[in-house]
Length: 63
Image 1 (tube, rainbow, N blue to C red):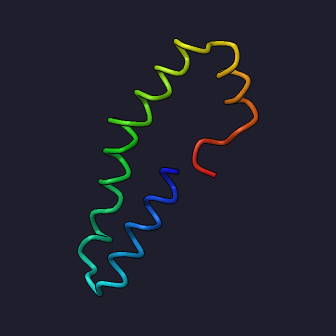
Image 2 (cartoon, rainbow, N blue to C red):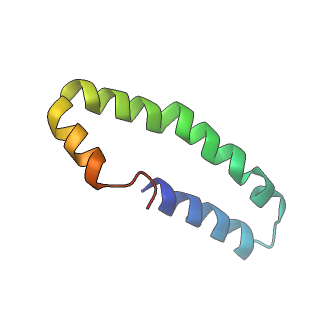
């Protein structure tokens, strides 16, 4: 989901012919990683420790 949102963000910048949002994309991804993904992973590990650990072993984070 987060990868798809990043692609949509980049696509929107390209369609709008505005290159400056592409320069901000790494910062947007970093902010999402710190403020959303880490919190989600922490919450899931607390709620479903064994199941989430198995899930993490077989599924990559971004792809």
